[in-house]
Length: 231
Image (cartoon, rainbow, N blue to C red; front, side, top):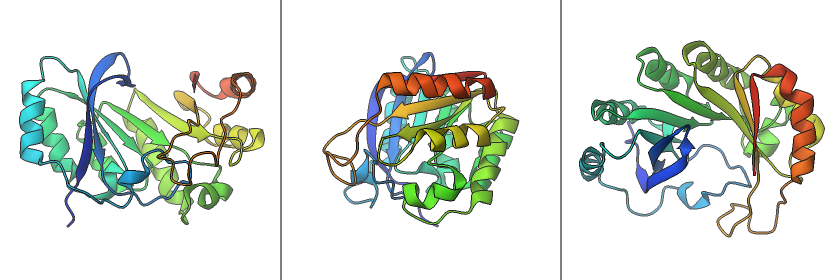
């Protein structure tokens, strides 16, 4: 079994855990190839890994300062031994958030049923019929649906989120995603941000205007408790 590989750390974040300070751990490797990915350097898992023993020691020293640890990526659920690392971090008293694309519902189910996760943010890339076009790889809709239902069943605090740019998702696509997820607690429209680290290259994609996102939000808010725009 492959070991979860941590390739980076953001020691203090004000925005990654709702209403709390967090430390974000970025795992290496991803099974998607979304062309707008802004963590492209993590996709292939190159470079040195952070030592997990030293990482846990650092988290233990800072436990009185930080509320939560966020497991992000890459895709942090690629390896099942993420479970073991979550257990060790949980022992230190942290809240736990998982950022995931939902492609390992078996691991997600284990973490959720054992009460080891407090918040999940699941990326929904596109409507089912356009998933491959945006994620860059074929995807079984049943796998994504299972993760969606696990999250909705086991958690009070969660969000589904979609990165939006003009070239890949239309208004109709966004409304189709929203209808697919209707009845969920929180949906986030996450506007694309360009950078030199984007997988397809800087300048390939463009964010939507805030006015467009607000009009889309107004159309879909009937299906959720909350729709958030992140610019």
